[in-house]
Length: 318
Image (cartoon, rainbow, N blue to C red; front, side, top):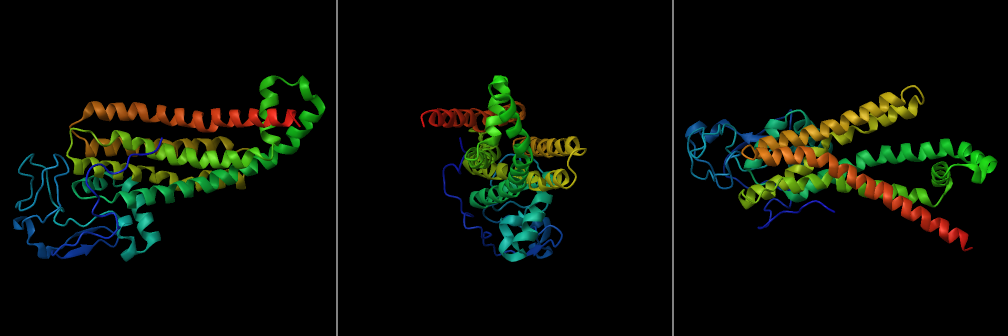
């Protein structure tokens, strides 16, 4: 299971370059966002090509005034079709500042981020942001996994040598999983695949067929930014590795809070981008954690058990 790609027509921002516009655009130094300058003529200036209402998807080309003529939504700050997502402007502001500003925008200024639904959103940029975030979460988790195995292996090996077949079935399987050298590279690969899938699966809820195709494509792309809080996964892992023992519970709580923040981001994005679809918002909020658990079980549970028993069978045939 992978996340949805852009639907229908091609994404004109797939190259990551901002859409060209004749209107002067200023850059917000604090967030890296691009907004229209005062030279645009204020509320009387007509909207250029490529700007859509964030609420109803109405194409605002040629519209004057500060509100959408279709639904009355406040359109202040929508005077340029250029992407306001810092990550899409990383070539001009730098990759690291662009990434950090995007994490801040998605996590803290979620409502402002939702307004980008009125413009074209680069699917390729969104997937690249997801890949970088997954990598930043995967590295500390993999380090913690291998450190835990290295720490537990001597104790587990002694238990297997001393008790052997007298162990319960559950204990025997768990101990063998720890001492099998060939298994942990498989676990690491499965962890990577699990993170890729769980960060992509929410995109299936962000392209309602009742919306215009452009809004569906933008929703799919923007849903991949919601995993931004996972970039902070190194904080609880570093805490656990530097002070093992008494802080394990605090580490687990911090990890749970990051996952909760990720879920809250998805809920807020659904409300901002699909305000008229309350039932779909509720379904997304309820089903996404269930899909995360299902994918985690299938990838990190069932697959590993199958691989382990295949290894046991091969060992017995030697």
